[in-house]
Image 1 (cartoon, rainbow, N blue to C red):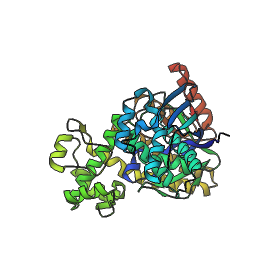
Image 2 (image 1 turned 90 degrees about the vertical axis):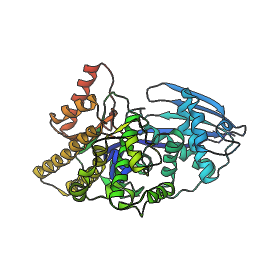
Image 3 (image 1 turned 30 degrees about the vertical axis):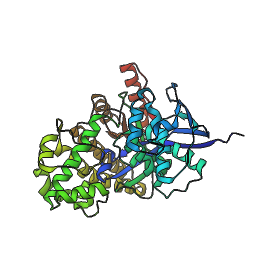
Image 4 (image 1 turned 120 degrees about the horizontal axis):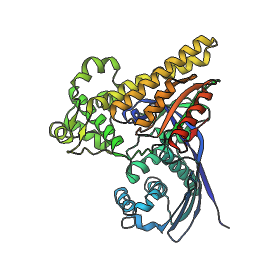
Length: 435
């Protein structure tokens, strides 16, 4: 009898925090109703057959000998990454087979092939973590198949390793944590240093966080996201050296991954806003080429975004964003908690207005980093004019994707009107998440 092993995981809506996760920010994430489902049967001939039905209805198929991704019979992440690159039409299979490779290396499973069937309700390229949901769902199916035990955050950390080391996308950890630990109708607070998960916060009755697709495809593996992340870590190096760190210390802690003894424990978000504004921000250059940076500062502590000598990096904006974003998220979290206790309607509206202002500030900061888009800017501008919509911001890695809206009950009519306007104007379908 064939035994089936299954796992599922939702997409996520980035309410606040976004790209500040890799700098150690507090983030607030919400799981979507849309899920990815993975079914696995094991084989003993090292063959792999993958069938994936996307939310669009498209069906992808891939088949290969699993040993093709092993280097002399053992797991080597760099080798596997290059092998997936050799087959661009089947590159999507790295999200699943990468999970197998990571579990072989990190948990010692013995894998001799398998058939994977994937059914996803999470649209690709919309900035709602389709990649993290498939990684977490695959990890859950493999956990069931191989009777694995994981600590609270071990599974999402291993899923992130798939994306960083094998897929080659320099994402932070918040997506995998949100897809694994998120609860319906609650925001999940995570301090990304790297995985300090706080108690979920219930969303008060009468308000909603809605995702509206911009119609512009988002990619976390895109150059702009990588460049912004790289620039932030370059800015951290400059600050760390200003605070007394040596090049040898930076190199040592970069290799070990243990940042605790570095200034601000290696995270920009541990810099108090007052300190950053008063004594650090002005010392950062507006921009710098990779060549100029390497000549004076040698390296950054980020292992996933190599500094390219010929590129120009916007150091000040990309370093400033996570420092101020972390402060915004903390304020937003406290306002949300206050909202749960308020009974006076005027007080509620005042609190929602403050929360919305923080979302608009976050959106502007994304644009300053170079991660905005005309379409998401249009949606945010329209949201500002719509009754019952209190805030709007681009989400996740930016460059298109999804806009998060903060609305009350009246605002839902505005959301549907905005959605209808976009569909008519651009003659295409726009997804609404969690309406």
